[in-house]
Every structure is written in C-alpha cells, then in structure tokens.
Image (tube, rainbow, N blue to C red; front, side):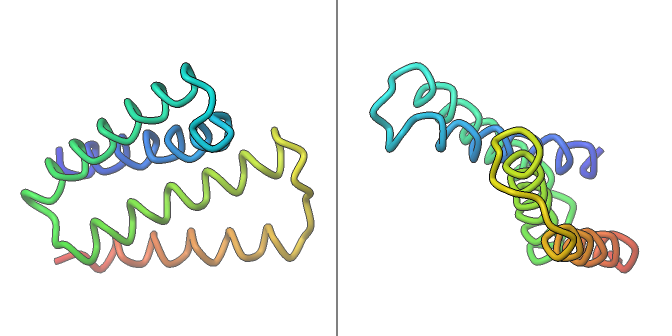
Length: 105
C-alpha cells in the first residue's frame, strides 16, 4: 500500500507545481488554495508511504514523479517548448526512479 500512497503523493505534487504556477506568485486566491490543498495532501500521503519505505527512496521517487510531471505538463500543455534533449532528461529521471523502486529492500 505504501507504493500506492507514494504514487498518489507524487501526483498531488504535480498538482502543487501546476497550481503554484497558476497562482501567479500566490496572487490568485483560487489557484493558491488548490495549490495548498495539493501540497498538504501530497505531504500527508508521503508521510503515510514513509511509514514503510525508506526516506531516501520515498523522497527521491516523490520528487521524481513531481519533476517529471511538471516538466511534461510544461512541455505539452503549457507551451514551454519540447525538444528531444528535454525528453531524454525526463527519461533519465524515470530510469532513476524505476531503479530506486527495483532496488528497494
């Protein structure tokens, strides 16, 4: 169940990053509240996952999911530019996350 919590925490981390961008420096109330809700939910789920998973693995995977999601959102939905090099970097992050999952003891 810890891996489910961690995956959900990572997805809410993406929501946090997208909401932070949409809040325009916390100047828009609704996106700011959504961002805070995503952040709180993400941290709560991460804490649940860390009851079982090691700190290093859980934190690295959580930030990896958030990073990859934010980059992909930016590239494909926010018009931040797509390039093969950026996609290759995303794949490297995913490889690291997968490696940590496979090597978790």
